[in-house]
Length: 637
Ligand code: PRX
Image (cartoon, rainbow, N blue to C red):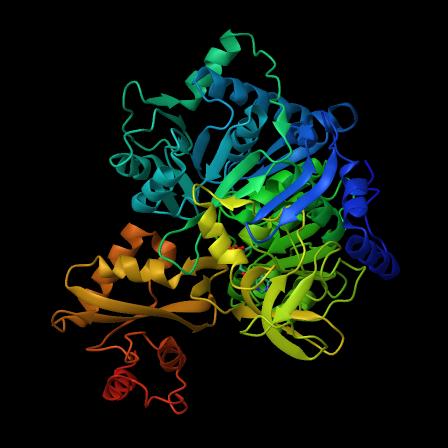
């Protein structure tokens, strides 16, 4: 397998970039030619950001799983597609070749069919990091069902919201999931969610932890029983459904600045083409390389860089069930050593937390297989970058700092490993096809170098978000209405003297906690559900390990006698309503919030207080009650 679209020199990158801007249709059509199509497209691109309406590879027909699996069978059938490393060190790992994965996906696609799942149906996947998760995703894609993976850390309420929004009638889950020392009760949480989702017809349960669970007759079935039925049918070959290029491939919910998560919808063809293009170029993947992305498949990083792009490229993807520092701080390095990992892709939070253990966990670990390192999800501080470079890459592995989002499907701005220049804490240059623009508050483009602004993208790329499920207007308002004719990312950005981009963080009310996106409004809504809470305001503050921590200011109907207990109770409510990832790190009880005369909360002031910048709070004279600021300053936790 070779990659004709792999860029191998800085000169080639510049050439490719130029062509992608001057002749985008020709550029992407040449790349799309490298994939397997049932029918080629009539036209490469139609777009109108005002609506928004973006279509790539119009009237092209394909099935992404034929690109991920069937295409490789003749030449790479015995090559490992997935290597699965279990949570516990003692349990043996699994290697699943392309041939085996093809068989398993086919088998589970038949299970889905037997259970009534059809093209266009939404299937919710709430599972741990077991091979059955990518198998189920691919099985959905094989028959044209739209999967919606929900991260295993979300609560019953969050699941219910997502099930209702997508009207998902089918669920695939586990009895439980292992994550470090914990056994996550997946099925119990699903049962709680389903109290409010009577439309769910079928729950397929994969047994991993042997935890006691309830199984409701006529609704819940066991994964293995269903597989046995397919075996009894003689394991028939399931025809991959012929999908239109623009048919949705999946929905993935993500947080925005409003209270309700949005169901980001990705297309079949555009997502396939761009994710694979980015994978091969950013990581400079070579056939045979073992690619280890440490993300959970419940997030976009796992969808793209554990499952779809790696398999489309015929690569070997290592997935790990557990946590980087469990059962000991050397676990991640053991995995790299054991599986001779060539590419390691992780989040700055993970690097910072491993860094905190010092160098002892690295002793005796052979990391010489590593060729490329990557980071994603949040800005990486220089200290973590240098530690990663010196102690993990031993100064011989380029580090790619990949900036992208759930909505962009794949990496947008990043150096290409060893091919284009890198600079600590900079995502550096856009990939071919990506046209970043910095704009001021009024939407005026900021040209030149050594400037900062809000980051927008001027022209569509193949894996751009198509809609927010069930509410297209929301998609328009969120991403395409702030600035005329541009996709707005929600991120602030600096462009240095050389034209390199550095992402400076969100400019909207979205937090990035340990590389996970959390909307402040969502957390506030959850806090406000707690008994006695009258109002709350949530802001982020710098956190050594998590990047950002969650700071909540809360007004209660009466100041609690036992503040510590009240804080713990509120934390528990948030964990119940959203999930443990959204738990506030700090809660301060206040009697009022700084508001303008029109009633708008001045978050700038709250942010500064949370950050400990008490001296320079700016102009507070326009506040309804300036006195409240002193009280908040004094009560800072
Ligand atoms: O703020 C940016 C930050 O993560 C946001 C996207 O979050 P999500 O959709 O959950 O996807 C995360 C994984 C792709 C962005 O708006 N972000 C992502 N990558 C970087 C980053 N911030 C700085 N540097 C990055 N490399």
